Length: 285
Image 1 (cartoon, rainbow, N blue to C red):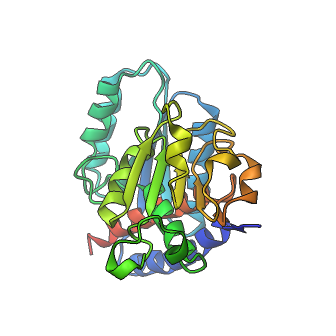
Image 2 (image 1 turned 45 degrees about the vertical axis):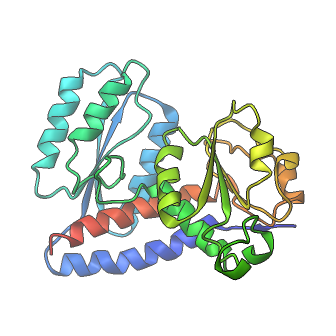
Image 3 (image 1 turned 120 degrees about the vertical axis):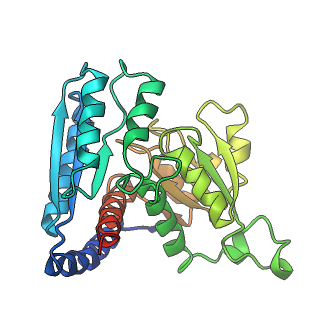
């Protein structure tokens, strides 16, 4: 049986550390506040925003949620972001994605691009000062997996460092590589030095590519897309699928390390977002 990573416990530890940092900021008169914009009535979006608010307030972070209509005029959204950019009490701004289908790709880019890079705690701008929280969560889990998984014996590329793999040049396959989560994740993985195979759910030779991976990350939102015959024995499997996960339960017969859904990447993503907010607040000190 594989190691099933407890994302809730890991996130709780991060939150406890953030609680101390928030207390220090308040002692010098800085009160971290996050502004979250939710457009439309998507139940999943409302759930995610409420979970973030609950977590934030548990450590003394204020979070204002702006509920806007599904067919809200884009000028109204841009005006709201403008006002939040100049509000000295707001240290972080995020827009809950995805936006309703009536908003175009260009609309989304305009909305995200207007957020000040110093307040873009969701790390969505190209020049954001912060790492995308889900990408940060995945990197955290990979680093934790290195404490228990011997990548020296599983890494497909043994040519570097006199034939020893240190877990940074292992082959990582990202399924959903061009999506909302996959795009910034691929960028960060390459920056970390990993060899990255980019795939999507409709990649013709998907199984051939996933079988090469020492670390497989799936972020498509398609339940049971990843089956056990697509996994290299002893691989690490990180499920970023939402809301039900991408990975079939039978994968546990092959993988050495896995993240569950729920309770895996999700809780860490929220703590990573709040970590970015604290960093944004500390930059003012």
